[in-house]
Image: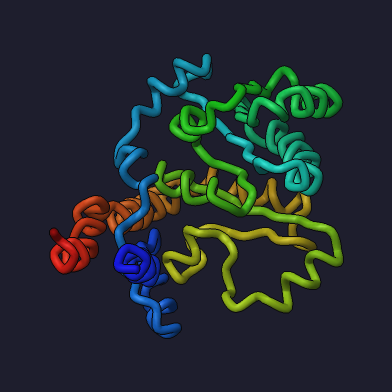
Length: 256
């Protein structure tokens, strides 16, 4: 019984990855401690862009667009073709634009087929499962809403967040929506740091336009990089120490 009571007490305390979560849990009478996000430790605050481009075989001085249309089949259904159609416009507008797609292994064949069908094979490198290397090399990222947006933010990359789902799923999701943002960087900043093109707004013309804005506005990119550095530092907490501190009272109370 004593062990069960201790386990229940432990389960009543939640370690939170994001700074806004403890307040929400406290309102539900759940003890919570913000301990930071592990990605903020795994991804360095500064990355070697030129080294990443060299490893990918990209030209060091030409812009790199990274496409991340999702890690699930349903996300690829909604975004892959839209991303490639936007890319067709962008390679016409930006001479020398290099494009990298880092799909999961199970989607490599599908992505390669789509790239071939789009006629973009001369511009696109498909690199299996190397998302962090691709992000390190990126000038700008076109990315599905989800954890990948946080990864792009920790790499300090300008991005365009996109999402598209079947009509019925969208209607259900809208009824549950409580925040004006869907992308993690924007939620954490509580502001539209980067554009979000969701559902009816997620069209190739708009995707290409927002990517072009980042490519054409280096001052905006620099300002965003500073904001994302602040975000990175806010998520980089002494995670293990904070977790140990919350466990200390339980350990002391049940020692021996």
